[in-house]
Length: 233
Image (cartoon, rainbow, N blue to C red; front, side):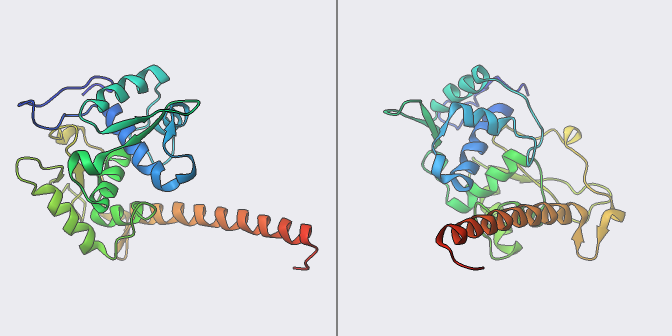
């Protein structure tokens, strides 16, 4: 499916089938609502940067402002995106909860699937951490099943288990039915350690590095504050 074009499902009352760029725009808005709440709703520049982000994205894309504006216009039709007025620059926010009648847990799962591609329930639990903290994998699986069993409006599907994999992956259906042969491969059986797959370990290591960087930043801020107040460490 092309990145920029939108196709709509029939009949007209059904939700639209989104292009890759439209799911990327929607996913970025959902993600940044939680990760950078102080700058949300997002400006066009921030939204373009989020779409072109090189980390935590699959596939990686490179788009311009005109491409993103076209996607926003398409998403406004079914009320998935709302434009805020009154500021110096237009700002945009998602409306997935109301437009698709979804709880925050389901929005978190769809967001990560839109931004990172097919994943196992375990990977989704880890990658959703900043959007929603699921108690355990069974909680993730419960919401995935609800999304998969929506009458006439399934939003995720459990993919067939690929050779060498121990767990099934899940994929969103906001862009229509998946083409199995076009999906990225999973880690082979020898790329696992104990009960945690290499892919899950990589996610954990990335998250740990992010947390360590945040702690270092906080330490520096506290150190400067102590120095300004004349307080000894």
